[in-house]
Image (cartoon, rainbow, N blue to C red; front, side, top):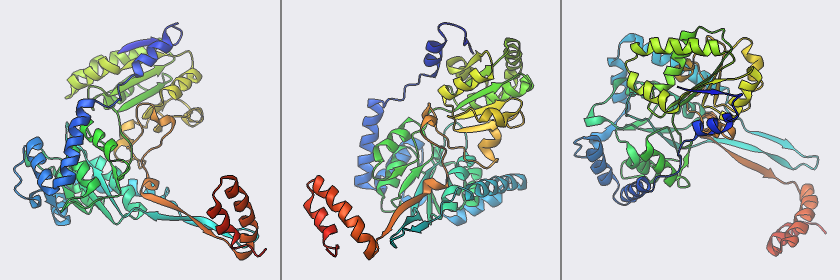
Length: 430
């Protein structure tokens, strides 16, 4: 891992270089995705089958070969060992309970002239969730994307998940059953995103697509935005740990590994206030890496984008954290609730030495779909509110129309919109 010191005159430049990640669209990927999306929009199921067979090594003859029903999902759940069933249900229950607290409700109030104003909250009708099928199976992603939609009141949750050579993962399908997914299509990539966005003979068009994916999925989500809503275009996974030296070094080392093992471009950063403690964590990492099945990925990730930063104190560490705006921030310090007040930008804040980031990934309750690549400066975790819409309510009374009509008339004439003005004036008594 790179070693940075805030007292170095080059620190800001080094930090900026560390965080740099090319998020610009790749023209070649965009070209491929544009063609796939257009083809799926034109040929529907036939194109979806063709691309799935080509890219995933499947041998589907009809679209029915790529569809799983509620009965299929329940069967997958029942095939799992009891301890996995229990873990899935526990995680889903905790995620559901947390997201119930986020649910927005309609409200109204009445002006003194009897005009009623308010906001009506309604769920989306149908959503699509994308569950990746690359280097690992992600049942947790199923729960984190489907459960908030379920809590919001979405009637149909359509899941797409690629399978390599048609091999279906029971734990992913079981998670879909537990989280209330309506139907699953075993398709992935840009073609799956296009099918959800435009609809085919068999895949219903959705209102919003959520969930992470590779560069082709990200490009497809960007392309179809506007036809449907999307959650975000996610970058590589990130963790930032601020440690005051009171947490066992082995714990911090493994927390850094937990994100580095996602892929070679994931980012793990540790900020400490003691060089001796940073050295202790480095020693622990050198020892523990020997036990990691995904050692090569972890080493590549830490070598490419990892760093240890020596800060003069925790106040400075928090300011650096606000600049980094990480996806996951661990405050592995004494009195974490007090230090959390100094954090303005982070996807999720894990407070105290017993709160490993991995608990948030699976079962703590808050969503693990989080803003990356410094977008936590202006965006938030996926939540129930992402599956609800707000409609403004306006019911003007006769008395209210007299006052508001005159104001609207003046402003409309100021904009040279005569019909706007007269529509308000017609309702005036004088």
